[in-house]
Image 1 (tube, rainbow, N blue to C red):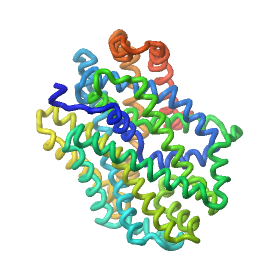
Image 2 (image 1 turned 180 degrees about the vertical axis):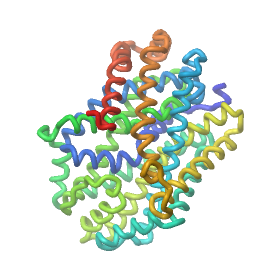
Image 3 (image 1 turned 45 degrees about the vertical axis):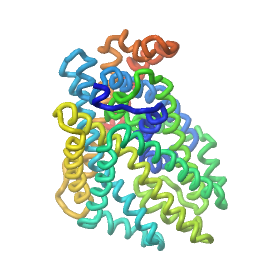
Image 4 (image 1 turned 60 degrees about the horizontal axis):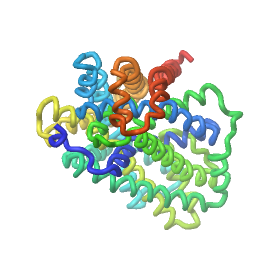
Length: 453
């Protein structure tokens, strides 16, 4: 089975590919935006605590299921549950969730790809009103966003059909270092701007007076979503892990990379924004409306540098989005390959077609076509809401209950310690966290999202 499925060839491939699944557009715009709204460094400290309390145990749980079973998510949950179909449905939930996310995520990724092309052609030069009208005109166009979204899905498809080593691992070894280099270059340019020190101070000087229960829950939710918990992505990638992979060390390294890139994104955005007097807390519009103005104003005395920074920034977004879409595509591709007994290439096409249909209708629902809505929300917003607010937390909650209370704890201990070859020191803490802390934290997220608390 392992030879047929393939697997990661190196430890570096494991770390970069799995970290790439967590690193995405949310690190670049969502994390800085939430940091800006919730007190800067104080939010980061709380976020980091929740990564340790919620993120690491959640990652380890999916790692255990995936590596032990060496199968796609649905089969993995069913196998480790001793064939009980109920738990297999948790894996199916993750596959459906990741497919929906890939569909609408590709629309935003397509916007990034188009903005990269526009930056190269110098089409984003203009005042604030021009940049805003440019985005509205493009995003509501009847076919242009569709074409870019489909192009992004096709790029993802071309990586997936090459397999785990030849496609996912090779792409991750290229994209993740490129992403980091681009990020560091823009961070340096941003931090050298006049007035940048105020942005750096805001990012690293805690203001605990702004901490409240909403801030805590926002940080909790960000830690949960940032690490891709609940999509079965980590479970799927872990099924390609080598048997001697140190799960705890891998989880810590991946969490550190993900958090580090999010903080670097803050260092990229805050100094430039403070330099021109703009607060970077405008949510999704930050990367398509606010930041083009920030870069133009910040580098107005050096227009060529501003032009280069704009190109690098949208190249960064494209790479970040691609590392995420690759992981989401692989979840469904592995499922169709193993459950329908189809060649990998054909299975990849099945998922590509399904996600392309979702992307087309989501893109059109943004404004090009009226009436593509569910419960008063555009299809794009509905897909975002139902996955982020319901399906992801539910999948992660059920996984923690499954691993904490239904999986044979001897099996769990053996996987955690690599059959006793790795120190067992943190196993008790992990066991307690996955049984009590993780379900409790996810329950808080649920109650907060639905307005109960």
